[in-house]
Length: 420
Image (cartoon, rainbow, N blue to C red; front, side):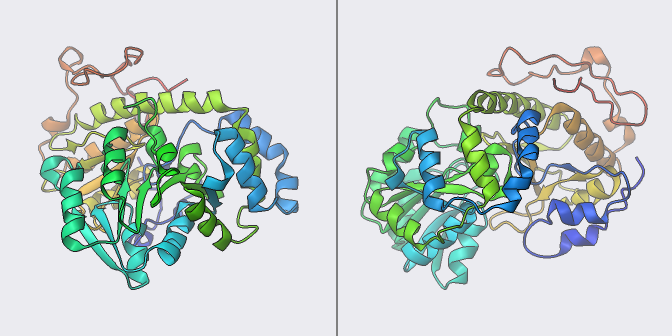
């Protein structure tokens, strides 16, 4: 594929990933960027929902939204929550900021690697951050008993757990998280960040939100932008007992939610079935994508319950160089993890996307790897010698479509048919 014309120097500025818009502005005419960087639900909203938003766009942009209390009450009525236990904000990151300012006084414990704002935000305000390193040999899985001992040894006043954790995708069973909350009932605060928990298919009811609201010191964080595939709207909420939720709610601006967020909140109840379908499709794609990534020689693929997959690159590969190569030559935007505490650029977090996009990612990674291995390693296997898509995935759903495996031509025609 010809070069995209994207200026990769933009990827080397700042501590966080470049925005999609920054990249798109530097791309050549007609270049499509496939985003494997920002964890987004590719199946929701549906095209029909976007059409509905488009039809109402003039009013959405022209008029003030309702106040945050009214929008929060509507969200609670849709989700079956008590309004006194919910505070809604302009994205989960805003809630992390207010939690730090209002509820974290001295110190906070956090496993690393994880979402960077949980370490960066309290450090910026002079708090002590006690970092509990997760181990690669354990698949970055958090042992809650070891973590509790660490918290006690350090004397941490606040404890945070991200479930599902970003970037490794590890999931903790609900019963274990409830036990963890009860073991730390004497702390100033326990935060369970469930921004990605809707993507997990391990349990029917994975959230501890209902359990948090009846405890004196627990907050559960939710991210609607991640779940609904609408990062640009910036909306999320927390659940806690009325005292904590009220304290956060009073600190938030009265009109902190925009009209687009309000419109989506009112649309949710009419599109619950489509949302559930999107989660099932994403779960299917996650298993399929993990199997495809595992076919690349030297790649380590970590099991995930998020809408992303963590991989470790072969020793001779550079995550930074691969990221730049993919976006410059294949229009594929990825997230290398060198700026995440507890990781190196040998790791990449790749967002789960439909099959046709995964083909493009795999092609680019194969092309990059050819400079390190003899060409034969990367040549296609005979069809009869290939692993099937569900090989090694005993728990894969039985409705996975077995797609053909041959590419044709020089474009990304895909080893599998595009998703319906």
